[in-house]
Image (cartoon, rainbow, N blue to C red):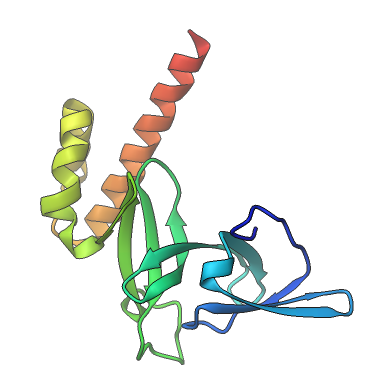
Length: 164
């Protein structure tokens, strides 16, 4: 989907680490930078997964971020400049971020900037989950699990609210 809400379909080529895509639609080939695109997705046949990317205003203008977790708190990632090209999907090959309420924050700041708000919204559920799973909110693995649980709780609460 383009920034102007136009939907385009075709074959996408996305050179990882660049904020540019090439879209082949029939005989037409179009090159689009991140400021012209709202989001795009494609099937990665090598990893055998559907990948979704969003365009956000980042440190250097508009940038593409891969969506790792959807929900009220999204987890996004951006390929590091000097990522391991032999294993591009390794966790260490990416910078991870949270996106919530229009704010992009590095995941390394989860413990101090995001976690307190999650606990404030759902104190019993989040604390119990962290205790039960023996998680340290300062680690990336724990942060990802806590965000996933928070989004699950949010979704369940919305479902209950929608039924009433």
